[in-house]
Length: 552
Image 1 (cartoon, one colour):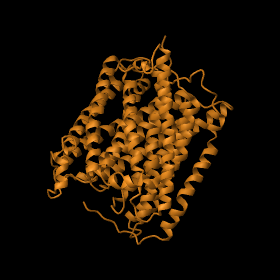
Image 2 (image 1 turned 120 degrees about the vertical axis):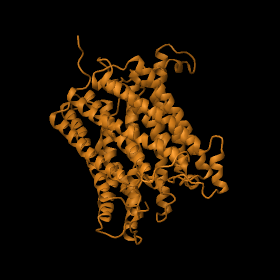
Image 3 (image 1 turned 45 degrees about the vertical axis):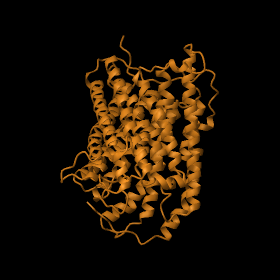
Image 4 (image 1 turned 135 degrees about the vertical axis):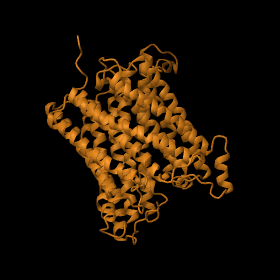
C-alpha cells in the first residue's frame, strides 16, 4: 500500500523552488570562491576584465546571503507543512509571491555584480558606492523574505485558532521564533538601504553618514548570524533525535533557548564596531555585556543536544561514562554531517567570545582571523547542517530514496568539506594572528619582512588557504552531484520527514514560553535601550558625511 506523502505535493513544489536556487548559488558561489582563493594564494592571476573584488563580492553574496536564505525558507516551509498540516491556497500564494520577489531582487543584484557595478563586498560598506539597481535588488530581496515570512506566520496563526490551548509543535514554534528574529533584525538593513544608500546612489544627496550606515548594518548583521544558525538548531533539536533513534531531552529547554536568542542576539551590533570612532565607550560596553548573554542559550543548546545523544545511547544498552558515543550512527551522513558542524561550533563560539572582547578585538579586527571565524561559523556549522538536512529533505519532497550509495558519497563529501575547512580556516586564523589583513587581494607588501612570514610558514601560509579552498570546491561539486541525483535520478520511494519526540520523563512545557507578545515586547525594550541614545547622537551630531568612492 502506497504511503501518503510526508509534505503536501503543492507545498513540496514551493519548498523545492527555494532549494533549487539555494544549490545553484552554492555552485556559482564556490566557483567564485576557489578562483578567489587561488588568486589570494598568489597561484594564478585573473584576466584584466575580472576584478578580484568582483569575485569576492559574488562569493560572499551568493553563499552568505542567497544559499542560506533560500535553503532556510525551503526547509521552514516544508517543516511547517509537515507539522501543522497543508497550507491553504492563500498561505501558499503568499509563499510564491515572496519567492518571486526575492528571486527578482537576487537576479537584479547579481547582474550588477556581474557587470562590475557593485564590487562593494557583501557588507556594502560606505563610502564604496554601487549602482542604484544593486540597492533596489537588495530592497526586493528583503521584501521578498518578509512576504515569505508572512506566509509562515499566517499558517501558524490559523493553526493556533483551530487548536486553541494546544502547545505548538516544536518545529513550528522554532520557525516562528526564527522569522520574528528576521523581521526585527532586517528593519536595520532595510532602513539604511532605503533611507541612505538609495538616495545617495541616485544622486539625490551628495554625502552619506558612514557611522550611521554601519551601525544600522550591524544592527542587522549580528542577528543575521542567528538567522542562519537557528534553522540548524531546529534540525539539531527536532530532526536529529529521530535520526539517531532517540528522544529530545527537554522541550522546555529548547524553547527557552530560542526565546533567549530572540532577546539577546539583536541589541549587540556594537561589538562589531569596537574599533569604530564616534560611539561612546559606555554603549559599546553595554552591548558587549549583552553579547556575552547570548552565550547562555548556546550553552543550553550544547547541553540539551548532548544529553539527547547520551539518552539515545543508554536506551540502546550503552554502559560506562562514554559508552553511548559508540551507539551513535556514525555511518549515517544525515547525522554525521550535522555532528561535524556541531564540532566546528566549539572553536567558532570560542572565536566569537574573542571577537567580542575589546582588547582581543583590537588584535584581530582587520585581519584574516575574522574571515576564518566566519567560515567555521557559517561555512561549517550552518552549511554542514544544511547539507545533512538536504540528504533527507530532498528525497522527502521529491518522493525518492536516499540510497546507500548516495550515503557513502555524502560521507565522503562531509569528510572532504571538514578537511578543506580545517586547512583553509585554520590558516586564516593563524595568519590573522600574525597580522595578515582581510579584504585584500594578493600582494607581497613590497617584500616586507612581516608579510614574507605569511608565505613561509609550514601551515600558516597563503598556499594552505588555497589548498583548503580547492578541497572545499571538490566537496561542493560532489554535493551538487548528490543533490541532482536525489532530485531527479534516485529510486522512487517514501522517505520519512524526521520529527523527534520528547523524552517521557521531561517536564511539562510552561505555556509562557509561547507568549510571543511578551518576548517581542522585551526584545523591543532592550533594542530601544541599547540603540536609541547612540542613534540620536549619530544623527544630531552627524559628521560631514562622505561623497561616493568607486576605486575599481
